[in-house]
Length: 414
Image (tube, rainbow, N blue to C red; front, side):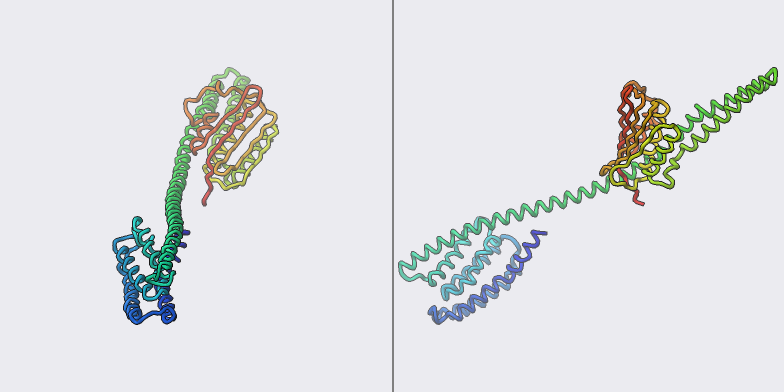
């Protein structure tokens, strides 16, 4: 944008600058003709060359392409020759000759820039000492002095102009590189968003399969065993020798039936995070922690840090399940007196920390499960990894346990 802003005034000056300088030179020469002693041949030459300069300027934009070229060299030399002769006829035509100073670096190849500027400086120096040709030794000495001064100033300004052009070129290249980088970054962000969506779909599908395996394992381990026990007790009842023995085994069968019914209800309840049906993750975790504390009698606290975001359903479900399992493990194995649960929103990540002051254990001594779909530490870790997250466990016998799940923050765009 900055380069384009600088190029626009320059393009306007390239178009109208020579016309304006030619017009000023013609007017100045006409007004000063008698004062500078402009004779009849000079007037005739001027009357011929001024229209020639106009024709040259009209053709310039049609035949000349941007940048140095052979055509540009020819046009530059032709315009210099016209300006030189006009300045010979009247020194005030130097207004037109000065055009060569600011066009040399754009019209001429690099090796011809200084020679082109020298020709223009010769014309300007002749005008500045009173016109061509200088009369007398003093004026010739003055001409060479003025020419040297002009060339020195031109060299300095040309060097600064070339440095400015180089800076503009580097800036333009930097801007182009930044634009390409931004485009690539946007493409990467779009691809990342698509990968997140695909990951969540895969996590949902994997979660469904894991829940089926978990439910099948629980049915086998609890409900099926309970039903087997009930059948065994009823078989004893059928062959009982007396009423007292039959009543005892009927009571045992009834207890097994109640227990199996409770296990069935618990398994069904664990199929989906019902707590998320009406609330977001922070509120669901708050209720879960409070209910767990009331049920176990353990002091349980829940805290939210950072700016709360509306998370994708799969992220919310994963973190809620991890919290439920960690609390369940603490109640079954740790015997804590205090549990703290913290949900932290940290930029592009969400962290869930569950800490207790229970008995603790040695994580390295816990055997790995044969599959990652069940509950326990492996199950929590598998849940986090399915949505590109991670789970770490810090514990030591007698010093409590800290479970930390870190997952990407994927917002709900609905």
